[in-house]
Image 1 (cartoon, rainbow, N blue to C red):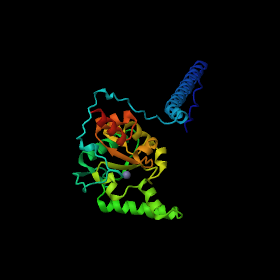
Image 2: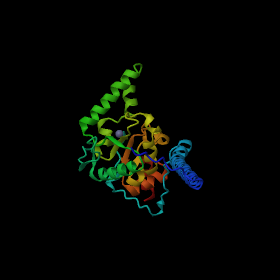
Image 3: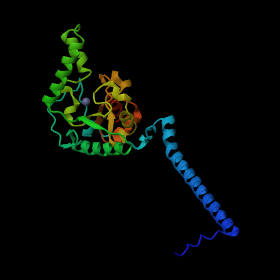
Length: 270
Ligand SMILES: [Zn+2]
């Protein structure tokens, strides 16, 4: 039997070198871990910072660009400026050329208005705002049904009113069929996923804020503004927008007037 030679003992020098190498390796590992931790923290802070800022400062406000109306030319014969209201009833049923403006709801508008609406909804989407066209063009039957439904609801809520009073009040909320602009195809009732009912609550949404700032650039105006109720005879409806073409919309917006007042002023000028 041959005896196994015992493992050779390390010399002191070898032991010293091995110790130094181990120390160096540990330092490298330690520094790499520190670097990794710092990089991770920096990334986290950079990711969190804008979110924290948005949380503190709130969402980016939508601000209207100013419009120079000095070169605006009013055209009294512009069909897009047609007015239908309690004093100006439809003489005959409009027959606009229609196009689907919102694929999700299938609602239609007059063809030019439909194309403008599509551009507007796309732009809003790019700003993180979803617009839903809940009511576009309506034929006479649909307009009658909308008025009747409103009248029934209003009468039920206000049972002490006479039939005549209830009808008067209802007409300031929802025009009767012959006095409803919705037949022209130029009216767009717009809501958003966070407000799906035609109520004043729509005025609190980001969609309304966006429309107030930018709709004119796509040819749409708020048809029955809150501060022009005496001029329109209609109760403020933040969802009810009207296509008039970009130049007209920007000029009307800049004037701060309701459509009726703006037209009276421009006609008086010419
Ligand atoms: Zn409407």
